Amino acid sequence: MKRTLFRLTMLILLGLTFASIFNFSSQDGQTSSGLSRKVARKIIDVFPYTKNLNEKTKTKIVERSQPIIRKGAHLSIYTLVGILIMSFISTYKLHLKYKFSISILVGLIYAISDEIHQSFTPGRTASPIDVGIDTCGVFLGIIIVLIIISVYKALTEHKIEEVK
Image (tube, rainbow, N blue to C red; front, side, top):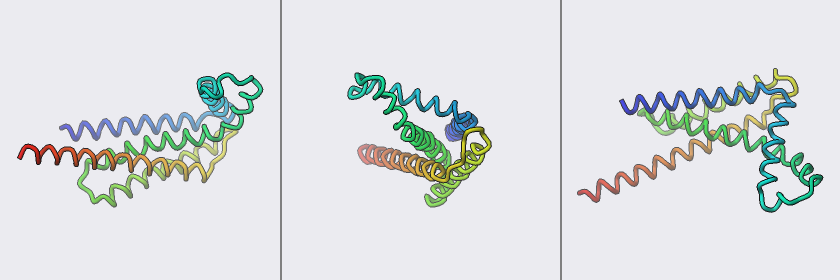
């Protein structure tokens, strides 16, 4: 029962994450750029080294930091995708290479489909570089889950040995 509930939770969260990605990709170029600018501006206004700069300098930093913000967004949301997929797949008794392969493949297919979808959005283009960044994010998410599972197993095995 616990496993079924966990799987269902992971699938729901993955579906919501995919819906969020789809929503971001549906934004036209101007809206998407505006969101990146807002995020960059908030960071600049809070960061101690940049918050007291003059307006002209802040504007330059915002414009130059946009690509970093955008690529960081790709990496981070697809890291979440990797975490959710691998968490779901890890509940099945499969060899690690299959768990890893399925997780990467699902993330890669969604990244490709997302870029194709984005190419039909006004002011947006499809980018193979973004697919690569997205796939790196999925890979990072998978590694995070594998580390968590390894630590959990080590801790539970250690507790079992203490009881003996």
